[in-house]
Image (tube, rainbow, N blue to C red; front, side, top):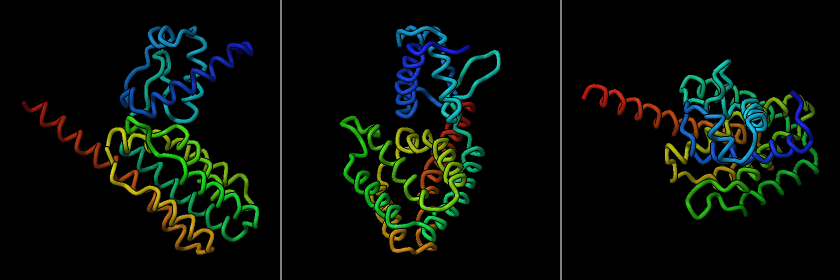
Length: 233
């Protein structure tokens, strides 16, 4: 069913609000999204909410279950490792192409994207990742990979990174990887990229991606052990 322009705009607003809740960890991994209850809370119709959830499902933030509605994406170690492997292979390749093919405009975009990211606070007063930082983070990583001649490769990398948004936020909200110096990691990636050091930049980018995975795998394993201990009691 096609929504009217007014409802489509409302669905976009609900999409953004619900995405922020998901990224903050307000909705636990694997939990069911109750359509009626959530639609009432947002003051919208179920059809508008379903449209917003469908868009979130396209980005991997929620999962559409046939005849059962929607659930928040689960924290699956296997799925996370698979996504991480795909990201490290694709993004490292795209970054190497950017370094080989990127022109002055690309360098300027990388510099500007990095400057914006460094000047945007990572968290808000409650210690939650700042939505503006998320936007700047996405733009910086896109700029890094946009210098190559293959727009399709860049688009694939962007899509994989979109699917990792939830994991990036969960690494702080759930795994509490608060001692990470993300700013230093981004600085190193930017410096090596602009120095046209393809090997060094690719290695730094891969390490940056894998750090999030390591934190979440550690959290998932600890949670599993706690669950097993609780079951034995």
